[in-house]
Length: 354
Ligand SMILES: [Zn+2]
Image (cartoon, rainbow, N blue to C red; front, side, top):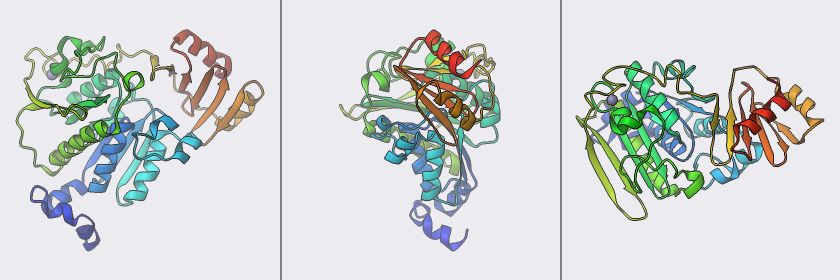
């Protein structure tokens, strides 16, 4: 290791659990993060500063003003420019540590692209906000044999669990019958998962809660990457920053688990994945097929028939009151102002064709 790296990471190298050997392993590690919201930005910041070798960030969304309270990599200008989160995060992280290869991928993780985007990494990190994507991640991690860290936060409360395929319980072991993705219902303050009807869009979220869970996630990732992981079993850790309650529960493998025992990967095989999904409280995402759009050309065409048409290199946005449509270069769209897939589909067909 050269002297500038030696100096940069000196306080971490001094820490007995890491040392120079551990730092070398970190510098050679490949990490992928799915979802770059409150948890994702915080965990990416910590791991890029700690000196992982590379970080791929996959996110489908764009920065808005309401993100800035908790999504710590973003600035007001990112929201004004309507930058995709993966792009804004890549820019900021490269400025923080230019020796880490940071790659932002503006995409929705689906059964079609999951294996390609996640393979050949040492660890997969959960920064998502939904169980559909988490079950897909769990399937991919088990199939590819890559450890992953489940993490979720809502209100003042969050949970996290480190999953090592073949060695510990997986997400389907933890959530049992719910693992078909139909619904995940914990009781209030369930140590397992936030209630399905409680999301950051309905009951809010504290930045401090995301910070605690992201810190635990980053520490777990660091231990795995430097080869210092000692825990045999999966432990589900929960923390409520408002009440001060915290728990750490040992989770057993389910000997009949459909995923990590039977190796049935329903989410990865795509049966469970609709093309039209809810995306936040008041938005619908449409992604029926990939197409390559010329955003500048499309922008000129739509300006004749819709209001507030704006575009940058990554996306095009326009208003059809009370709806706001954001279209990405791969043909995916997020329609804000409705929960009705039929309305979203009809807007998509009218302005973007089918
Ligand atoms: Zn399992």
